[in-house]
Structures are given as C-alpha cells and as structure tokens.
Length: 311
Image (cartoon, rainbow, N blue to C red; front, side, top):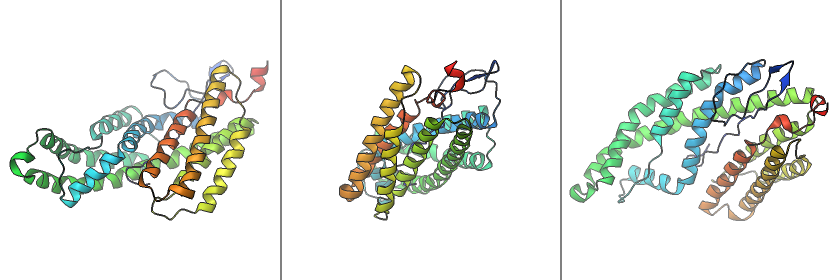
C-alpha cells in the first residue's frame, strides 16, 4: 500500500432475497440507511459488521487520493524543514469520529481489524491536537512573526506521529482489504453452488482488478507482463458480464462496465507510456476508485435470473 495513493476498498454487496418468508440478504455495504436485519447467514453477519469500517476508510482514502498532490508535499516540507505559507493535512478528525462510531456500534469477529482499529485511534488521540496546532499556526500566519520557528517546533512533534499513523493505518487498511476479499470469496462460493454464473463473474472481476492495482508499483518494480495478462482477462470477463434482471441493475452494470474499461485503458497506458510521470499514478488510482464506486452500486442478487425470479 502506497502512502497518499491508498485505494478504495471494494465492498461486498448484498441484495434482498426472500426465502421462506424471511429476509436472507441485506443491502449494499455503502448504504447509509439503518434498518433491523434478520441474519440467516454468517457471511451476511460478517459483511454487515465490517461495513462501517470500510465506509470510514473509503471516505478517508478518497480525500487522500484527491489531494495527494498537496498532502504529500506538506509532509515532505515539514519533515525536511523547508517552509511554505500554506499546508494541507489529512482529515484525521473525520476518520477518528467514524472509527469510534464503528467500534461502538459494530464490533467485528476479526481480531486483526479490531486491534488495528484500536492502534489507529490511539495514534490519532496524540496526532490530532498537534495537527490542530499546526493548522492554526498557518491559518493565522504566525510564521510572519517568528520566521517559521513555531512551524519547526510543531513539525518535530507532528512528523513522527504522522509516520506512526501511516504505519497503523496501512495495517488496518490491509486487514480490511484481506477480510473483504475473504468475504467476496465466501459469497462467490455460495453463488457457485446456486449456479449464479453472472454474479460469480462479477466477483472475480472485482478481485482481479484489485489484484491488478496492487501489482502496479510507481517505483518501477511492476511486473508488466502479469499486469497485461490480468488486463486481458478483465477485458474478456467484462465483455461476458450480463446486464442483470432489473432496469436499475442493468443501468448500474452498464456504468460499471464503462468504468472498468476506463480503468483498463488507464492501467495499460500507465505501464506502457506514463510510468515515469508522477501524476499518472494518481490518475490511475482515481480511475480505480471511480470503478469501485460503480461496483458498489451493482446489486449482485439481481445479476442472475434465479428459479424464484422466473416463477
């Protein structure tokens, strides 16, 4: 995981399916609605448990990617003692609020997620007061009076805490990513047993695009042959993806397909032409994040015509 270019986590998406008069599925992981849910699947239970954590990190990651060209230089300037008249800092407070709410309302069955969340919150408790002081220092332009002495003093506190935050945050991001992929695989196994070939293809597409973005290294260590092989498989799979059984899902699938094609084109362009252009890596992640957003709208329960729907 690269600092400043952390990808959105592709959330597992459930649909509503009535089985024997009861609710079996739920709703998309990114839904902000609250509801009373009757669980009849441990997969559903685990998916719902990690949903608030994924939402919290998605929001933080989206901001980090969008403002990477400001966040990264700020950290480097503070680390190196070079001075500017403005700074841009991550949204630490928003992340802390979201993670505290998730921890209180939605404990997970995963010890790595729980421990990583605690580690991030512990660092944020120390980091946020220093970040607030640093932000106020620049907003009030105190550097005009003390020739950046206050900035250097605050930076000496801020930079080590920021580095500690990145380490703990990346551990949480990785834990959620791994658990989310596990749940994708569990859901895919269920769908394979139910002969939901279109939904299985959709899940495999998301797993493959996630693997592809992880293979691309801005430091020049990309296995371009492996990436190209993945891109070819993604193209084959996206062309096989069927539109689904409802007009809403059909529209969502079309937008998802278009977004996947944009990602494939951007990834291929990056490994062939633009790998030496710094902003190209950011643009690649923006395309990936857009694609994940489109994936999160697709209702997997409506991708295949089940026997019940045919009746």
